[in-house]
Image (tube, rainbow, N blue to C red; front, side, top):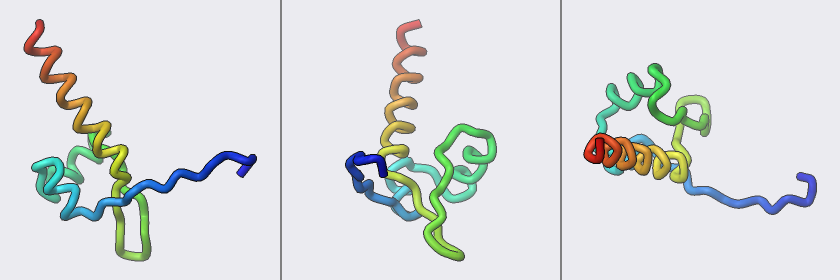
Length: 72
């Protein structure tokens, strides 16, 4: 690891992502396919999760988009 410090990140499961974003499963996957939402991280054969930091960044981007439209 080249002496770099490993930083642990929390991984959110889909139900947590739905609660955090207000999006349902189909909207999450449609936005992933369109390149507008973070891709999930494989956790196992049939399990995925999302990095909390990437979901937080997505939320912040949505707020910035809203504010940019309000200021235009």
